[in-house]
Length: 330
Ligand code: TYM
Image (cartoon, rainbow, N blue to C red; front, side, top):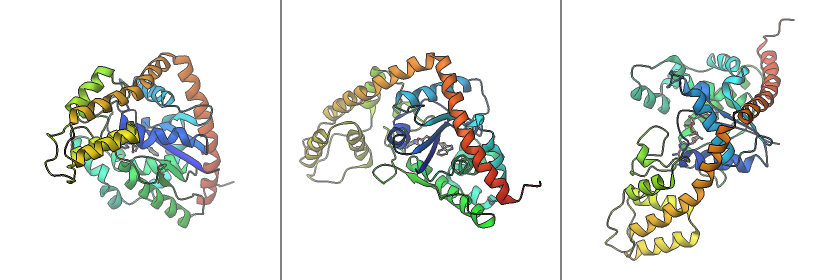
């Protein structure tokens, strides 16, 4: 069985990007593969050193994972900081990572720009920690969104470097999405992707109330429609169609495609169908997540069981790693 690993940072509410980039794949993969899914709490410390809300956020992310259909009896669902072996492998991989390549990482440059007063070494070595998370389980499939492509390329490089320097222990990890191309869910303001922290009115969260979803979709950037038949769509209209494709039926999509092409489209109607279908999808997840979040005893049980599974896999890998590196003195 192939091994699957992925993670989500507890830095805010989960949104449609997290669902379509990551969670949707998790739920399918848990029936096919050996899966390790985690809450990346250590990664969140690189940008969120204040831990006052961390516990609440970890509980929320776990609850939302389960509410989306992840089954802790099928996949290991755990917290990164509970698997101490991660930190040891991270240390070894740091000696195989070059500062130049780390400084060139797009996410490092972005985050350094956003937090100029806290460009810490953990932020620089973020991709090394992510590589450790993945190869610690000798995983080869990593379900993630498009924004993680470069991190996966770096994880492959670190794994290959270890294999060449010491011994062939690690399979090459690859980003994965059912349906091949990695997903990027666009934000509703036509600028970039949905994200946990940026423009919250342009991101739809799995915890949003029905009213808030309607308000956000109503505000999504559109215009008065095309004036020439069969013209190219501007990016922000392309985004609305992309969302429609994720939520609505093929029939609905085709109806608006033809209306676009013959210039009869009314974006008000398209938006109404979009928010209706979004609400139908999100409201049961929201309600389920809320009730799981209140059951602290259950969450503790999930975390303990997940950590035990993940640590067993991590310990097996780490004895191979120490052996390969010659760190076995008796
Ligand atoms: P994070 O917490 O930013 O995002 C979690 C997952 O959601 C995906 N995602 C998106 N996909 C499509 N469209 C979007 N708008 C969108 N926004 C977010 C992300 O690609 C990701 O799959 N570094 C990782 C966490 C991590 C990890 C790992 C992932 C730590 N260790 C090991 C995989 C394997 C991150 O910050 O994800």
